[in-house]
Length: 369
View 1: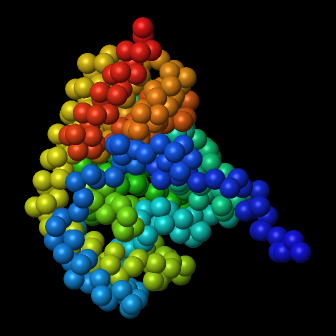
View 2: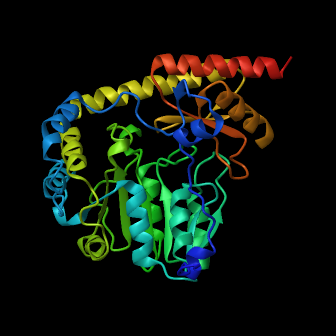
View 3: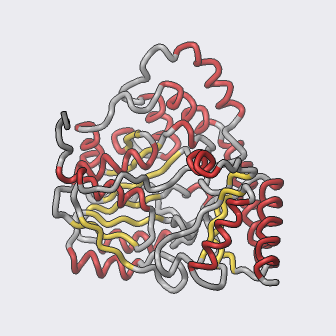
């Protein structure tokens, strides 16, 4: 028996994922990675207080977590200076993006995003049968605010997506520019403002938490600076009525008990976060310094990774990517035209950065012989 058919929208989608994880690559190639610098994780890990909190709660994993994520939501509200009803918790930003698309998109709807921007959002858009309208990055490798706004005004989409700071390029706009963009978008278009890298951005990058609009949702995560990528905890901030929509469809027990405990403990240790951010900045500077000596053009970054202009084309950048992988160094590269001249290296430990840059230097020297 063939069994039931998939829904038509899903049946027409490829069986792919937006990002192929390093474990998958290791299984396929048989090459064990010596340095893991492709997933924008924090090699500095979470606060020791987080580890202690997880260990202390481990024996209670037989119970479900709080379906309302109350303690974490309360801690976030206090930390951010915003009411609890302006926050929802989810399984990372990825999970929240999926819920957002379910809430707002129907087959035939259109969204506006940048060509080459975070592909997981596009993945969720496709699952709803909606169409992506893309806008090229500007000449400074930033998402084009003017281009996005022009497209919004012309296309009249259900959603416009913007990341600030950006992934995969690491570039950013000042808060004042973001605020002007938000105020210019018509109220019937939802603005997704992805602030996953907000903690590592310069002061003045994130608009104040008081920037609230019925059509604005801001997304943040514990996966990056807080070092909890494996725990899958993210949150969205917005006007209470907009946030309330998530309760209609969210997985109420999706954020595990240990994840809630870990995120709450991480939020409480801001001293450790400050030390981590300083270590990320130092690692970012080291990647920039080392790759400049190789004749490459690292792009200024506000994130925990550096996009590196290889000075040629996609073929050359892909050669470097494959060469690094063959030598056990996990990095990534953008795929979109205009951005695909670059490779992207996450901040690692000083040892991992040195190893990766040494391997990159050897590959370049061998190619130029």
